Image 1: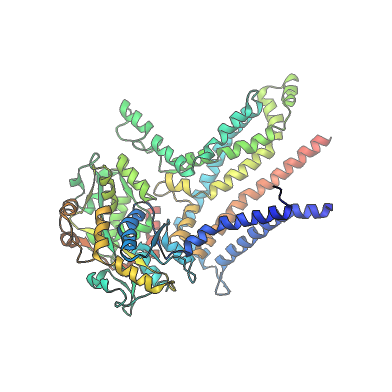
Image 2: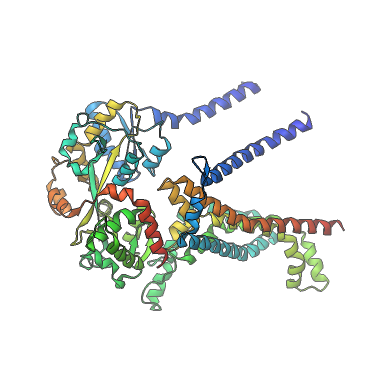
Length: 352
Length: 279
């Protein structure tokens, strides 16, 4: 069989067009596309939320793993390709402030009634801009081969010079929202008054071996014992423990740990709005959140969610008991001042 | 097909590339200078009024210069050895570019296994009792420079090698047969003739080192932020594109301040060599 030049060109163009289609189809076929972080988060969303939802309702939700869903929401402003996405509460607040999120009434997401209003991502006029399905907490992860957990019974211990070059730390972007907030509370202040917290942060920074740039890197540092301890996420330690790394433990210091709510939001002008509202309502319900806990150790936001004995043993008690030991700051204020706080931390670190 | 049409068709891809590049560059500089249709230098004022940013700029240039120096120090002898190798030269070339088959992230993490507190070297030193606590061999300037040299060395070797391969071996032999010592032959014959490749290698490595992101992120310490990583943060976390553009423009200008003289020198050397060859 012989091809003319024109046929060859047409075939090449056709092949190019075909190859360029999947990404567009991926973003438009559906019916629902949910932007998620990768790794364990994506797996949790597939197994605990999306697949059961498809079985119950017949509506398929495809979990698309991305390094930063917020960046996609911003890049696609005005022409959203995703129906929903996950972010930290601070990211949700920032997107909401920039008028990039679709808002819903309580009648559209009735399951929100079972979630404490202090966890709601809502506009000034009370409309729901995001659903909080669960939260983690920010405590101190300790490699018990390197140091006993009792050595980190207070956040202040992190500033003890005896830990020089033995601690890990996250980047200023997260130091500004998480570490500084809980250290400020430890120092007698709060997110509005961070002077004492900044001093503690400075003390901790002097002990730091390196700054973790990804969760995988931080996991490795802890697991290998490159660092003895670092402020870290409860769910990451949960994953390490589930993977058999039982010598890394998470500690809630006597001053408490920081409560970290996550938010699921829809971009402004989202297509299939009604279907999105139904999906968000499902996310706000107890059953998928309980499955998420069993898979990844997240603490459900829905008050109806019940902990099994196994979960209680792993978390160290009932959800309510745990929540009582966690500090929930004013995330709106933190988000509003984040850039200035990061600049202050950058300048503080430059003087070390 | 007429010759002029052939030339035009050949130039079209590079012309398109240049147009896209220039458009992007103009937009980049424009977005850092113009706010709401007005010239606005506030982003530049903000950068130069912060001591940590000025220090970061200095650190970026210093690390780039040191990386370039060490790449040259290691790259020239390696390129010379490959150029004069009488066996299977392609195999050596393959070995040089082999690291490019592995992700830069994996290559950088490889150093953690060797230099980290629980790494090979610290493990050995602790085991022998020479040190009590692990030495800080990485997460500092040293770690960043080491990682960058590892990543960028092949560029230097290939740039120099491409020129060394063009230098006839008998020129060195002639110099030595006339009584010149190896060091004299190197200084007066090999080095001048290889300068175009050396200068190209310096330019390539320096430019790539100034804009490095991944290696400083993974191997740098607390106070070792480079301008590339700061730009990355402004784009990926704060979505502050004008500020990122201002930082990128500063980086571009400071890099050009070093690279342009090198380019002028390279042309001068090439002209001198060309004149020498025609005499």
